[in-house]
Amino acid sequence: MATTQQSQPRNIVIIGGGIIGSTTAYFLSHHENFDKERDNITLIEATEIAGGASGKAGGLLALWAYPRCIVPLSFRLHAELAEKHNGSERWGYRALHCGQIEANGQLNSQTTKPPSSVSLQKRSANATALLRAANVPEDLDWISPESIKAYESMGDPETTAQVHPYQFTTSMASLAEEKGVKIVYGMAKQIRQQDNAVVGVTYTPNSKDSSSDVSLELNADTVILTAGPWTRTIYPNAPIEALRAHSVVITPSRPVSAYALFTAIDLPSSSSKNSKRREIVTPEIYARPNNSVYACGEGDTLVPLPSSTTDVEVDLARCQDIVEQVGSVSRELREGEVVARQACYLPNVSGRGGGPLVGETGVKGLLMGAGHTCWGIQNAPGTGKVLSELVWEGRVRSAQVGSLDPRKFM
Ligand SMILES: Cc1cc2nc3c(=O)[nH]c(=O)nc-3n(C[C@H](O)[C@H](O)[C@H](O)COP(=O)(O)OP(=O)(O)OC[C@H]3O[C@@H](n4cnc5c(N)ncnc54)[C@H](O)[C@@H]3O)c2cc1C
Ligand SMILES: *[C@@H]1O[C@H](CO)[C@@H](O)[C@H](O)[C@H]1NC(C)=O
Ligand SMILES: *[C@@H]1O[C@H](CO)[C@@H](O)[C@H](O)[C@H]1NC(C)=O
Ligand SMILES: *[C@@H]1O[C@H](CO)[C@@H](O)[C@H](O)[C@H]1NC(C)=O
Ligand SMILES: *[C@@H]1O[C@H](CO)[C@@H](O)[C@H](O)[C@H]1NC(C)=O
Ligand SMILES: *[C@@H]1O[C@H](CO)[C@@H](O)[C@H](O)[C@H]1NC(C)=O
Image (cartoon, rainbow, N blue to C red; front, top):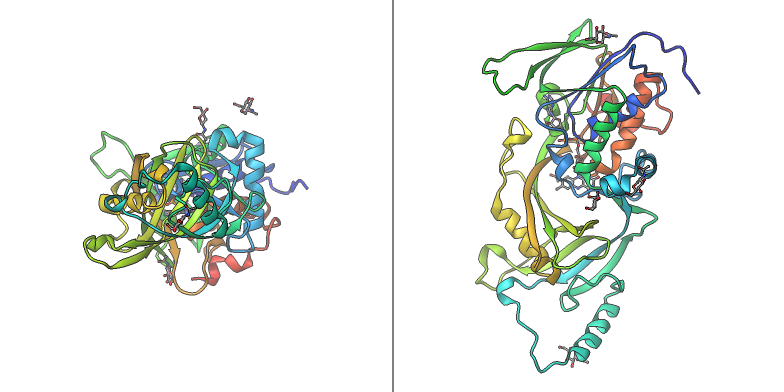
């Protein structure tokens, strides 16, 4: 297995410390051809590790995700990483159920207490019948029986799992650091080239006391661009757009069972609470270990991508909409405590093909792992693995990723 012809000292720079860059750093530094006495691997991050979508995503992993060419590898690597590094403790890795629910929501103002004349026994008999009729699993007991119209399973613990994406990403970065990866904080400005081959990266270091625009250089024979939605700011040809999405984290009023739920909730329109208009909203709700529930809403294109993760605008009204939507179908969430209201940008591949773009570009030594849309958490280990093979062995052997070749997209 050992590819011993690798003996030239290598200078590798990864741009972007989201989940893709951090996981790539992990696999590069855990590859048998890496020699930390001889080779340099530097990860350059503009703000903080997992400061963008990688720290604010849901964290669902699924064998039924896409693209097919990388999902099975990545799903398996998630399980292996969790096994090897205590992921269930360290980043909340666990298998879980996933389903789609259809429900009628009730907004706070309309929530009426059950009439006191109805005995609890009767109510629960009725509720059970309703739940059975709607196909709802017995342990999914934190969605109100009165609201649920239908349940359809999308995945079970064999095919569906989850991680806490912030904990996973920062763990990958630390584990890479332990193996010799150097993490540098600064904004990469330019990938320097000579004769159509990379020779280095110019960056502005972050430092609290520097008012000037200092530029520093890192030499490199290999540059891996993993800047997520910011990929275009350094590589304008990449067809990657940015889409903002809001999310919240709620401590429910009591612990809830392990389900990831895609929803379609019929609600009075939030823009006209007094009118009779209704709308269908589709928040995703992910129960997490340690008595926590994550929920996210739909994307919007109202505010263009800011220059860095620290400048992302959070629209609190949109967070409140998510809180009300999920509270409209669950007492545990309605009576819970909202502990985070946040927003981030996911990288969306525009034009034909869904991406992500993984592999070599037209420039020698310039690789890319970007544009993972809504499955970047699921597909990060597979991406890092195939990029590490490309760097250290000159070819990918763990999956067939030709369809993701960046040269096909640009
Ligand atoms: C609401 C929401 C829910 C999601 N849920 C899931 C889910 O359940 N499962 C799933 O698989 N996926 C999910 N995703 C998708 C997932 O979050 C993304 O695909 C993934 O995080 C993208 O990772 P990334 O590393 O490419 O980008 P990012 O996380 O954006 O990381 C890019 C990093 O690059 C840095 N950077 C940018 N420019 C520069 C520069 N010039 N120099 C240095 N550093 C730079 C940034 O600071 C940032 O840290 C979700 C996304 C959203 C928005
Ligand atoms: C690695 O970095 C060190 C310190 O910057 C430098 O002296 C060395 O030449 C680099 N190695 C390679 C292979 O360029
Ligand atoms: C994993 O975590 C458990 C519980 O905290 C601990 O008992 C065990 O020693 C840990 N294992 C490793 C390999 O760190
Ligand atoms: C859950 O809480 C326990 C106890 O506080 C802690 O040890 C563990 O790391 C937490 N797990 C996650 C995934 O946050
Ligand atoms: C169940 O609810 C329906 C509709 O509210 C009601 O008509 C019916 O009597 C209830 N049945 C029981 C057993 O409470
Ligand atoms: C992503 O881009 C594609 C192609 O441009 C577009 O059709 C799609 O609506 C976008 N997705 C989102 C969620 O905006």
